[in-house]
Amino acid sequence: MLGDSEAIATIAVKDLTVARKFYQEVLGLEIARATGSEALTFKTGRSELIVYRSQYAGSNKATAVNWRVGPEIEAIVDALAAKGVAFEHYDMPGLTLKGDVHVFGEFKTAWFKDPDGNIISLMSF
Image (cartoon, rainbow, N blue to C red; front, side):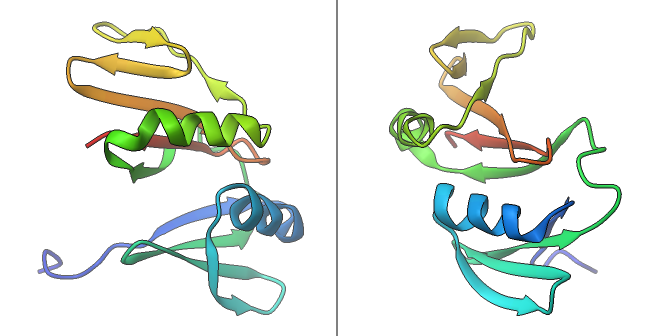
């Protein structure tokens, strides 16, 4: 039923102005639409990311959104770190930490948080 439809990631934030700066200036996303002072929709690849104001922002303790960035993951991690992004380090079976990138065979991933504590992941595949 939904297999042919695109899914859209949605992230709750407390302060839309702070979120806009982070997602636009730090992550380099372009705003596709603004819905008053309540939500922003960013273009990301062929999809969209909705960032909306909510009192429940940052309450999710799991990954909120993943970006499939391909083999450029290390360069992207370095560029984000240069902009002040702090990366999370997790101790998981089978993962080896190399700098800020977790490696599992050919698969690489890195996690960081937005200003509200939403967990974001970059993946190599």
